[in-house]
Length: 240
Ligand code: UDP
Image (cartoon, rainbow, N blue to C red; front, side, top):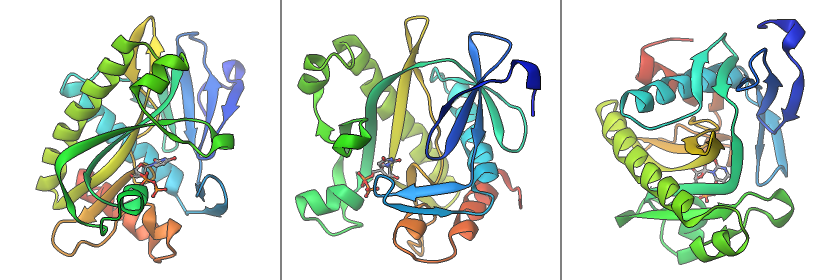
């Protein structure tokens, strides 16, 4: 653990803990092995998930930094810890979809795996009590969750991130089905925050269409840890 003295817990979520650091502009994120699905109704542990998601997220943030996407990542501190810029989180989850799956497949009655002819961008209100309802730009503005400018920024970044990740993952024989992003404000600037991992993305093997993400946990498909390891391996060549 980095610098115990200045490290005070300020927030604990389903998969991560957040601590203060000696620098008021920076926080320390600790990745846990706890797994939840269906808004906390299903709970469990995925062995070493914290380590794997920390490494996978760090890898993606470094890639996005190189591609010019402003984000909260400072550096990876240890197996389970990442140092980030402190954000005031915008209470909106931004979902990008390339292929129908999960809640969209259900909502519009398309079979899972059917390609969406155009990319779909969705916004959800980040509120567990309400079950994260689907909302649009008008709701976001009316509710004061974000300004028009901030919505534009989040949407542009989300679509750019989709292009970068889709292209990158294709080379690794992975299809990016959909993913969720969170953004926050740091000195008035919109930055990408949270994590990018098999917890927040759907990854399918391009050839076999095998699911290599949290759907293995959500749907009791088995080999959950193995799928997370496989993603880290394909991205970095790292075995553990
Ligand atoms: N997602 C997420 N957190 C949420 C809801 C969704 O990370 O609270 C991710 C999920 O992993 C998937 C994408 O967002 O990659 C779209 O999820 P969907 O709306 O299909 O919901 P789900 O079927 O996962 O409930």
